[in-house]
Length: 395
Image (cartoon, rainbow, N blue to C red; front, side):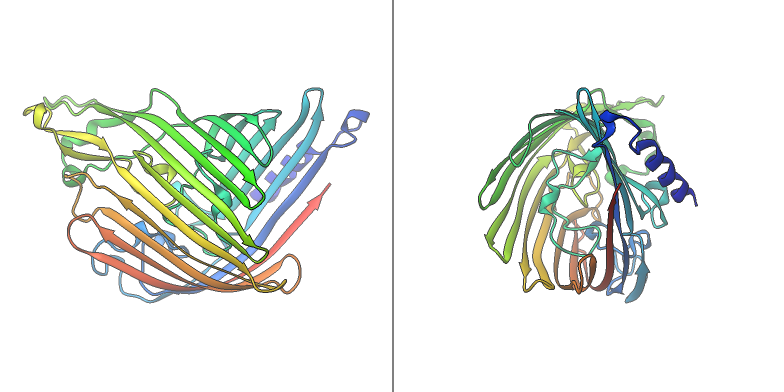
């Protein structure tokens, strides 16, 4: 009921008003109903029972109990509203979109989850939308929700400037900062409980895409400043800072009319929260020059992400996707031996579209997690069956 009332309010507020200037105003209601069912070979974190997150696979034997396990879910169901409203300065374009995949304090729940709340006028845009460091066009034609572990995928609140728009584009943005730290083997020390993160500056990101007759090539970058303050009364001084940065090179290549390759290579330090399935941005290591009062220091963790997928069309009604993704984190010396270090992800599927807007398919997925230094790794094979109905209506 709350979702229905919210949608009604947004539609009514965006609906065209009487007047000659509003003759071309439009509102589009769109989305899909989606149901997933399947079997997890290895039981991962139950908050993510219906997706494959390599970082949430067991970090020790039977951490979440024995497998296999069956799941059913409608959390991929989505609703969105787009509006285009003429003004004297040009058309205002807005996007408001949510799904049912609970996140944050609602992780594991089927509940309202905001995806986009974004407005754009001319060369400027504000709100929550895909970070310029993300190339969402690189996402394969798969049905698993979370997606390739090595991709940079992040929606963020931002202010963006787009001096070049169209198939080729240039975007520059100031983004909401945020990062997480791993106290490693010292995580339970009381001295660390008073260390708080602080972000004096927004993250700065940019992307440039060059469109070609065979697809496109894109280079994105990001730089950020992370600081942490020691607010405790003990004699230890654990404050510090780090500079995070990243580069993301991606491309879609139309090999022919039936095959499209999605390729991405991302590398950086301290940008894990912009990656699809990474834990901490900052780790902990010994501080040889710090003496007894500053025995450890925080460092930005290097991360490498690789993604390669192929989308293939068999016929107007049948298609497939197959590919592999990997991320590798260079852990710091004092992270826990069971800390996440490497994730691998692969899948293959067969999708059937009997009529426009209706899709069903089966997908086989494989994931693997490797710990930092204790020699443990866990892997899983999942089989997922999905049903999806797309809808769209322009007012």
